[in-house]
Image 1 (cartoon, helix red, strand yellow):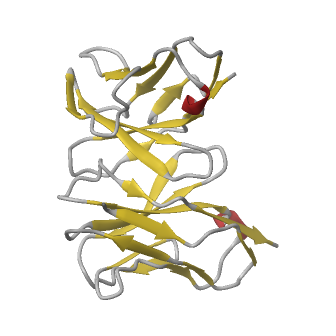
Image 2: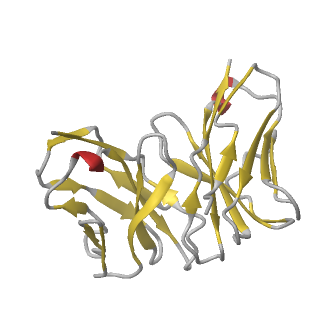
Length: 113
Length: 113
């Protein structure tokens, strides 16, 4: 079945470091891809999305490109801040519906001053 | 502008008791989704409801679990005769349409003793 695999955390970085969180997927069709972020004590928030191959989603300095050839959607940020400390989830869904999302296990990021 | 409200935030039950989790969607949203997050796992889709209708319950366990979204009032996820394996965080999300962005609540954390 369809699935999402993320790099295992936790990931610890110093402020201003470059961030990459790997995400690959297995899908029978052509899903939409998402990154969600969960700050401590809060619910998940949509960070960015891409709906078709070669699309780039971006928000708050984060970027991810939908790579069909490598079935990947890696999350990147050039310079992380302490406030980026959170758990990041990669997810996919089909048919335009964002409701039936398939999530990865999440990657915890800690940014030290 | 209140977001998705879930209560209780924390619930402790003994084996065999019932757990009821409530979710009030964002104002104007008529689509509600429930997800379960087991320890060290990603979120798993459980059920998708619209007012008075269950649209997709493909992720719901066949026994002991039920969900409703009445015409008036919050959506309820009900777990009968809880077991230790039901201990998890249960997240509710809402959207204004099937293809709309999901907004998540902060989750309800169920602990079964």
